[in-house]
Image 1 (cartoon, rainbow, N blue to C red):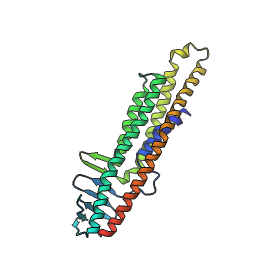
Image 2: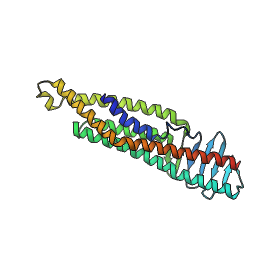
Image 3: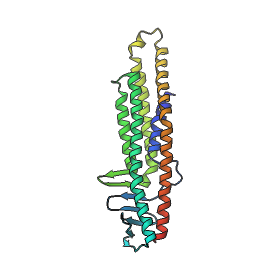
Image 4: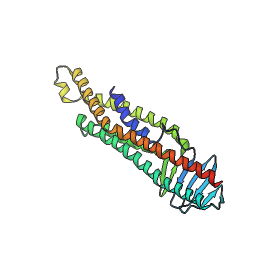
Length: 238
């Protein structure tokens, strides 16, 4: 049970952070955002939009009407707002999950527990996975739609593996605690300590669950709106 609770704490945050796995409207295009333009590359063709609404479609400069130009301006502005917001929110919630678990581990096992390093490694690995979906280099951010499914699967495996190590470390470290050696029933004391750790994680998770879920819903709403804007712009511009 402890493993399941620990797994849920980081896995759910990772899933929500990776943005819209449960969303019906996942963009099927790659989107690259830079200071000069927003580029959308997919099966419908390649569209490049500047901040003032100039449009290039499949390498050809278009002459958009005032209405289409405004559509283009609005779409690229939404991309500039929403992609960084998703990226920042994802990293923030992964850090929140790690900080919460770190605090519990310190309270139950001490600041020197080896589990802290496991959590550090897992947090870094999950952020690297997320970077496969939303990558950033200098001032260029790119959404890679084809990476979503594999990132989801790989993130689950990382969390499963890390939580197995966390559980084993918990058992080992609790087994070496002084209060166990002086107790008349060491096994009972160990089970009690594990139960206390599990309860602490459950209580902490309840404090963050609503925020994680709301973030996932907000991501889905923004992604859905972006996709509606993109479809409408493609229809108007071509």
